[in-house]
Image (tube, rainbow, N blue to C red):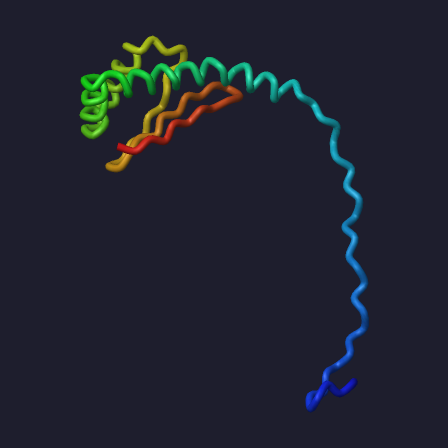
Length: 115
């Protein structure tokens, strides 16, 4: 112990530095990542088609919102079929917005939009 002005300060032993153990990382395999990226391209095109239709057609947008608010899933499916998409999206909606998921085996594109 030593005195620092009027206070007594304990002296602790020095702290040894902590070195985390060396971690061997696995080899990088890009095949799955490339496969997912290739699958994502058509999903992005479907999402783009949907967004363009929503942004360009007020009548389509109004019909889509009305059917979603009424929870008419079959009517929403018909509206998506009009867009000629390569994948059938799943739709979840609530009073403040909509979540549209374009899904395939190894990839998923999710649109989260407010209304």
